[in-house]
Length: 353
Image 1 (tube, rainbow, N blue to C red):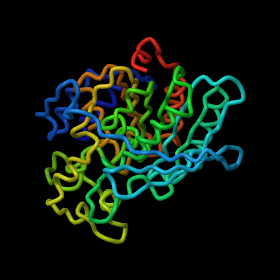
Image 2: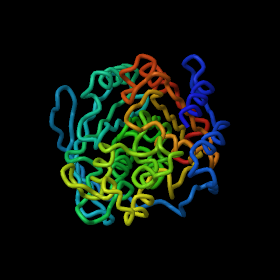
Image 3: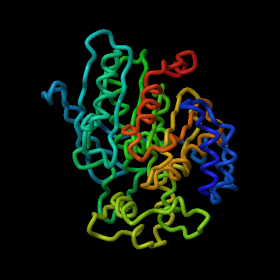
Image 4: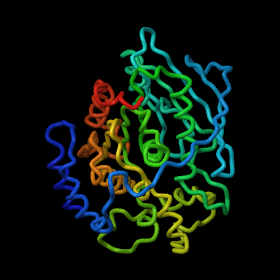
């Protein structure tokens, strides 16, 4: 499999270019053996989308550095606990040309601009005329309730709900609406597109640095050496189990390889059972070729799903040499920057607004 991915990188990455690489979907199907026999219809495996939750937004702002911040809560009947968070909103000095919503990595409990590379992207976004909205979860978006078997898919109702609220109440609907997230933030975006219908309001989704949640069942319980690039490390297993309410000190089913949870984790995966055909959304998937945390190959399962159903505006790139922190790599940073500031094609993306 490693040789295969080296071949894919050579084919996909001529001199810092990006584009649509749907032609390579069949190669990925061959390489990822457990998906080789998958067949999906145009909508993927799911019959519909999950219901969004309820957002309670406090309109009274408070100052956070030079920005305005707003507290909110998100609740849903499909999960047991209300999540709390903060929106940080920065407005450009001149005319607003669109909005970029940013989702931080890990469990999302920090603002995207907390890191130097993220702050640089934010500053340039504002200079170009984009409003930037950052989402921070106080306790993390994917920490589940103990013994409730919620999982990532259900818990993703929280980022999906606040994203819909932002679109409905805080931005101009006739201007580009862009989602931007890495690692755990990339997972937030992928879940909301695949299971909560957020593709219908999204012009561009920039999903980079992969994620661990592509096929949770394979990562946790599979033992086939052909799928070894999808198997989780011990660190990944302890994080995955947080979605079922296990803390870092308590061993959960993924860490213990308890196969009685196989279906729970399979049905909580990003790349299983969702909608993967997004007719009006440009989706950019960027992976680090030297990613050492296991996000590359898990992330590619999502690309395979989008490509296999013919989602028309899917772009995929592996940045050779870049690690999991793609923005810290000079080529990775420039790649993400160019994608973010490429103008949205409104001829194809505004019909369903």
